[in-house]
Length: 250
Image: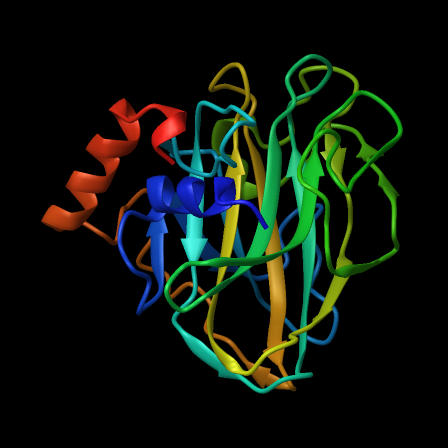
């Protein structure tokens, strides 16, 4: 993988992710509106652009305005371990405003390993994987997903819950992602969502059931609504660097 993803995650997370972090708005919930209980569980985690931070949730080179990024604590895996989780993309935006979300596997030192899924708002056709986003290296089931159309009721969308800007609003329903980790080592997972071209008509992603070889990986702990976990000097340094450093310096 190219270093574009590592640069993006550093800009959103800002410091080595040795414990779970959130920039923007992350949290946990039970069934809520169009987002049902996840497969095999009763609660799920989420990131949302509602209350998101400027620049967060983006993949470098893909654009965006405000959003949220969640990064897990470091976990260990053996060669051949299966990494599994389920996700659900929800968007109140539509035609011409291509909000998007993603998940990725990185080493414990934030070197990129694999893109695990992407989803992107568009007026018709499949939105998973996300149009014009980096290729997904995990196996998705189903492999392509059209939007379930209509203004989605979901509390993490804030004031835009139930709203629909135009064709393309709705949700995907739960989709599974599975990836075989090739090498033993220490890893983290990153999840992000961003508005695109504006900062209204919010979007979000729910995710659940994250396991490595059947062992759960930590979810957001509920401290995150509207907050940035990383409030230290390192965070401020990286946010400043990302605001001014040219892409060529990545």
